[in-house]
Amino acid sequence: MDWTEILQFFRGSFFKISLLVFVGGMTYRLVRILLLGWPRDRVKSRGSKATGVVKTYLKGLLVLPFIPWVKRTFNKNALTYIAGGLFHLSLVLVIFFATPHMLVWKSLLGFGWPTLSFPVSDWLAAIGIIALIVLLINRLTHPVLKLLTRSPLWLNWTLVFLPFVTGYAMTHHMLFRYEVLFGLHMITVDVLLIWIPLGRISHFLFYFFSRTIHGAQAGKRAVTP
Amino acid sequence: MTEKTVYEHWRESGLSRRDFMKFCGLLSGMMGLEFLPPVKAFGAVAGPDPAGLVAEALTSKPRLPLIWLELQDCAGCTEAISRSQSPSLVNLVLNKIAVDYQETLMSAAGFQAEAAMRGTMEKYKGQYVLVVEGSPSVDANGVYCTIGGRSNLNILREAAAGAAAIIATGNCAAFGGIPKAKPNPTGARGVGEIITDKPIVNIPGCPAIPEVTTGTIAHFLVMGALPKTDSLKRPLTFYGHAIHDHCLRRPFYDAGKYAGAFDDSGARAGHCLYKLGCKGPTTYNACASLKWEQGLSYPVQSGHPCLGCSEPNFWDGGGFYVGQSAPLERPTVAAVGIAAGAGVALGAALAGTNAARKRKAEKAETAGPKESSE
View 1: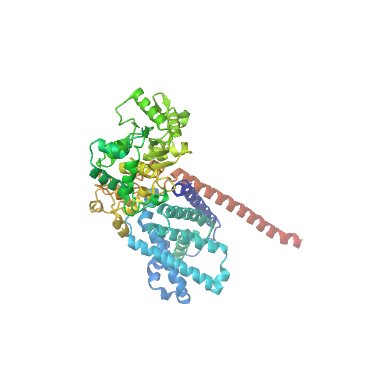
View 2 (view 1 turned 135 degrees about the vertical axis):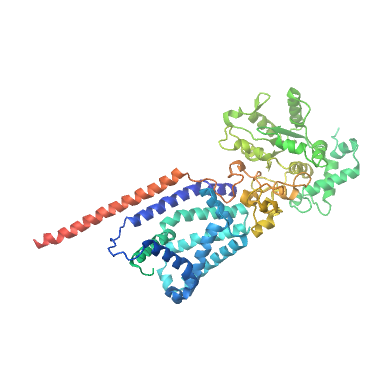
């Protein structure tokens, strides 16, 4: 089996299986959370739930990242905040707005959208990789973090880092032939898709879930989320 | 009586020694003798005079007997060769140094043609080169492709048995090509999957670049062996680099400037065709360096994305106009629905079991103190 065939398998049948496992796994996780149930909110309504939701997203995504010093997280641990923030920014922009990735979405959804120019997405990917390395060093050297970190977390880091580096090496034609790097990229992406529902990376969905709930609760109480 | 050498044939047809030396220079350049390792690998030294090496071979060796079989093909590779705009090279190789049997090009037909093939096979047993164009078909013992009432498998096996080497030209002969595309009704294969006991070289392409086929034939004549190949048995001289490596649109790829449609401003400005489905990054061939029609152009230069025709299974390798990053297989809406449904069902079932267990525990807890108070 040569790399062309390996690539075809991981771009084809195995990708499809991984995607289905991902969809099934995430649905399972969401259902389990929803069916845990929560106590009825008997507070008298003082404001709009929808406004609360909108406000919490605007604040969390558009305001606080630009004035991070008002947050205690930032003041207590600036490195994690900045590296973590840059990593997430890089991840989201690269996954949705790098040209090759948009073409993946286009083939899955049937429509595409404008993309970032290559140098921009390239720098974003580089920033993501550097941020991940910084976060790893921090985790390896910080005494408390080191104690808190168990093997699934190292696995999380590895499974996110590998698609990043293989993708970056691929676009720059580094080290190996293109189809080898493309094959490695697809293997790591497929494995990541299967792993996401099993681990903490599933927070990509639950983040929106919990923000919506908290925003709605705050909106109902007419307090700032 | 010893056979006439290539050079003697050449002079007899009225061509001058000057033309011969020019041809040798051209041939050695095309074979990449100046800088590629096969020269040293076969004990000969190209040194500073690769043309001299070719001239020496052609003045001392007889014409190369060659049998050209056509199996499940469109004769496109033959068409490409016969219509090539570099007659000085392709025609000279095929007329002056090789070819004894070529169904499409030879004037003989029917029994006469078969007799010519058989004659070559007997006379030059163990010496001739077998060029195969088109894919062999193995299903139903090769009955889907018969020539003169014989199955293609019989003909191929018989011709291969006496061959010194095999050159599989075109994607069909090399990897199965279009006949092998799903659902592959005839059981098409690459020649190398059927003939495993002979030295074989693949010249994939749709069609194969004429100069690459003839260059490989010339290599065998001059060096006495097939050229050094990659893992897919393609000569490194011609398949050592991806189309993307030598692409004239590469600077636009590096700058992230893509054509988004065949008639947009990017396409008119000659931008990269990656978004339009170009397979250049994973396709190894000499299109971007040798080009076609005497170096006039090649598909990407002409504004069409590379189809990846020198790679195995290119016909099933994703849509021709779909970006290469796109997955080859996508789950259907029904499959996604089933996966999500399975997730919901499993989640609900486990949540239900948990809830029942919780209720039972609560019941036991409330019942417990009562019993103890009695």
